[in-house]
Image 1 (tube, rainbow, N blue to C red):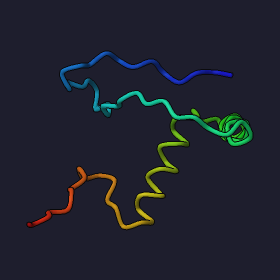
Image 2 (image 1 turned 90 degrees about the vertical axis):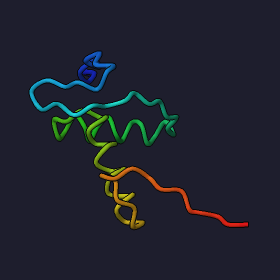
Image 3 (image 1 turned 120 degrees about the horizontal axis):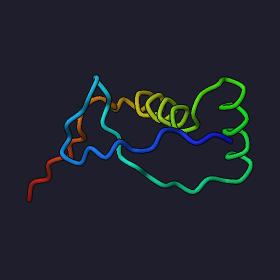
Length: 78
């Protein structure tokens, strides 16, 4: 199974050719979920990480969280 492109090493946030800055994350998945992800990626000709990013974006949007803006913590007063 083909792996996605390696990180481009831009640690200072500078990007070339309009690339998005991405950070590496590791998540544990149920084996069957991982198998399904691999098959969907193969059939659709997409990287698994692209599918996971799309699914996470859809989930955050569904709970009224804007995935394009930084999170804000609620303000608590004493």
